[in-house]
Image (cartoon, rainbow, N blue to C red; front, side):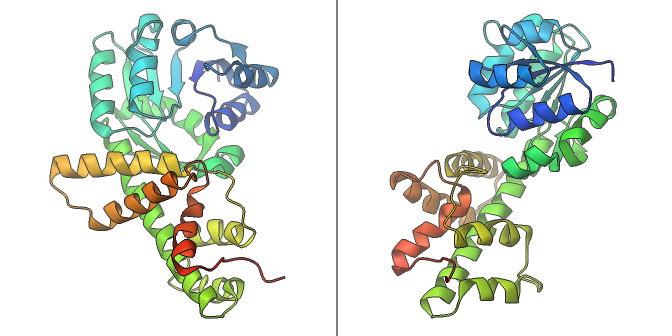
Length: 298
């Protein structure tokens, strides 16, 4: 418990994750370019960091939770970044969802200074970040993973090491493909049921216990029925993950025909001004085509 932890990136996901570490009694020094978020987490008991470098200087374990590859590179390798402040032996846990090759590139650069990196992206969105039940996929050295596993399990219900650095993010890309295509399948089915005149809520109740049942179905259908597209996970972030999935797949020689289709559906929603909607809002693409709205029958 005595380990000093630095936490950089207090967005939709990072803020509740940091708060869960504080609740568990860990000592935390935090930083984000959004000072409001820093103040909120400081009010919950964290120390305020001045910069990524400052956080790194005063921490043995550094967690980053940032939007995409360029942000992680900037925060870790850039001016006033983590690498400028980190001591040899520091463990850097990047929990952002980024391109696996970028994870490997950053890991190689920080290793030159004796810093060990794990890539540890998460799945579960904001609700699971809040209640500390994320699923965490980790790539990197086993001994470093063992040292931070208890910390990860404060933020997640599971933390599984899947291989070397980069494999955590490869696993996350696999996860994001399955989630996106699940949401698309759910959308097609619910729009069909509604337009055919069957109550979508009853269809959901009838199928959720069978083979078509899924975590996605249980998480997203109730929100759709309430027309609640407030972001647990924004469409624009899912686009970013699918972009990384397609890039990675093409580099290793894997065609992803269905992934490219759901990617284009999300791109259409982005053009329609829905980039900041929850990814469950994918259903709006199908609703527009079919000229029907899936909602609770009052």
